Length: 181
Image (cartoon, rainbow, N blue to C red; front, side):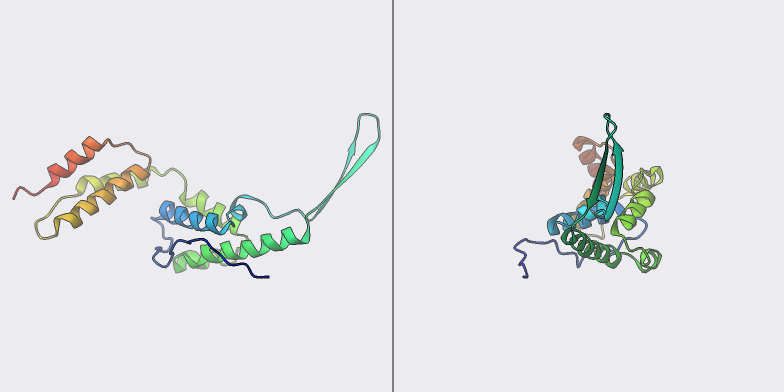
């Protein structure tokens, strides 16, 4: 029986493919999609157990056998959701990264690898973002609102890197960058 999605899903047609600079934004947008599709559990949980048999000795000397069997429905749901998540991850990567991860069958392994490589606190990235923000200058030949928006994006990048910048400082830096004319 097919079910209909009554949810509004984000439009990922404009999502930039993952390259080496946009991991945080890229991962958050995909995570929002996975949460809405209710498949995000694939990224954080191991697949359902097949069959595990344990013998435990109890204090009175008797043995207890425990068998854990994941039902077929749970396994099939996990496999289906893993394919969905894996497909989205791969489809939203640059060709270079796609070629690197195409042989991974587990979405969790792909996600964990990307998080390990790109999600760590990167001092170099912070320095780059701050440098771009400091070098920003207003010019006469571009519309002012376009430049204000560009400055807002640079400030958001600084804040997204976990650095604090009060609003008064943000406004004063913008005013200082206005052209004297």
